[in-house]
Amino acid sequence: MQRRVTLAAVTTGATLALLAAGTPAAHTAVRQAAPTPGTLTSQDIATAGTGSPYYRIPALTRTTRGTLIAAYDARPTLGDLPSNIGVVIRRSTDGGTTWQTQQVVRKEAAPKGNGDPSLLVDRETGRIFAFYSSTVNQGYFGSATGNDENDPNVQQTDYSYSDDDGLTWKHERITAEIKNPAWGGMFAASGEGIQLRHGRYAGRLVQQYAVRYDGGNYALSVYSDDHGTTWKAGSLVGPGADENKTVANSPTGASCSTAAPRPTARWPTPATAASPTPPSSRTPNCPTPPTTAPSRASPPTCPPPTPARPG
Image 1 (cartoon, rainbow, N blue to C red):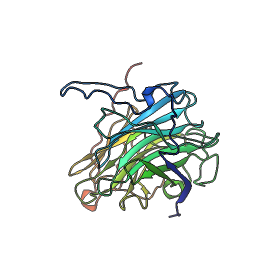
Image 2: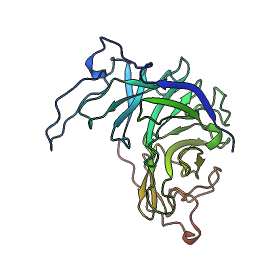
Image 3: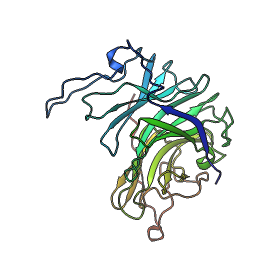
Image 4: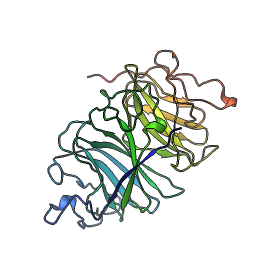
């Protein structure tokens, strides 16, 4: 396993806040009346043209201190990476009644970009992870193979983490740690990862990725059993996958579901991983589960394919 690169930049909410005096209230800390219990209310916490031309790809989590964190892309256009995109957040310490001023998690000078955030909270340590893709010249479909963390043509797998409830962030690059050099583009599936709470792998952190390999799109679990000190990649599931999510099926295992019209992949042991090797040959439309425990030698029966939605 190669050593990860600790990126030099440290983002501080106080010094890199997006908004200055005079910015419209949609992006500044503004107090609103508390909602009436039992009613559904909504707020616009990011408005195109205010602070950034566009916003996309929201993620939401609650920290161990009860703070809500909403993360999303601040984009110069509606286009995806590669582009000069930045990851920004807003925090709420009162259950979403009010939101603090928008702050930057990571933003770099063009042509660099960071986008598609996925949040993950370690419930045992309180650390908050924000996974995202980092690019210079190429995005998912154009990325070169290899895992050189200094290659501008390789889509990089980065994350930022906070140990003070989202006030400040530090950045890490783990491309060499988790990416098989045979793979092309690779990015964290946006939204939220999970932490397993029961069974043999209790405490395991799991973040899903989409991987481009040999002309196909695959789902992948990346996991840590040491609170994020090191990360490992499981087996590819696919092809035919897209952005995907894992749900813990306590206490027996986990399920991985993808946005593409494919069956859900289920495995008995929760996101157990093998070495990050290319996938073996598979029955069409029947993903092979990641490595299973000896007592579970036979994978579960694959359900019939899910029909594609019309139109």
